[in-house]
Length: 155
Image (cartoon, rainbow, N blue to C red; front, side, top):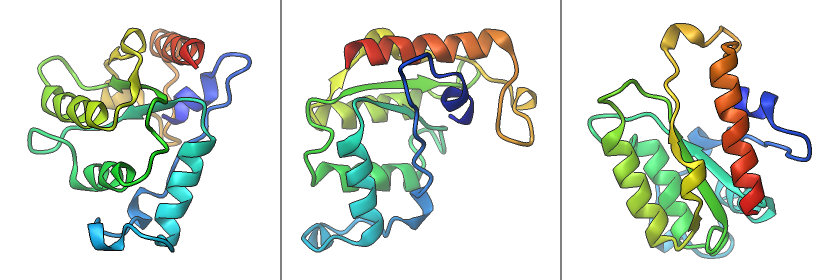
């Protein structure tokens, strides 16, 4: 996702949400004002975005618990409803299907505008990611740029 931010096409400003670990465990009883600060920040960022791009690893055949927690906190708000959303999967062939299946189910539950032409697989081998979290491979960078261009076009 750091590479996506770096290669965003002209007119697109990609902002990363790096507060995943700050979110408290979801409890519907806590989904009331005042929201926990990390939840309020997440929802504010989503509300301010014209579109949202998700990328998640697969863990034990599905979404990692921390990422599902982020999605659970999103259900109680309306910030994602109707918003253009896409996902990318960077796993090798034969991996990631469980995470994408679950993510797609939750996104449809959230009634997002799933921009399917922007969704897809873009394999990023572990060794292609530098210590700074960036990918220098021009094919991967071009693929990310096209995903962002397509998603932005839907916004």
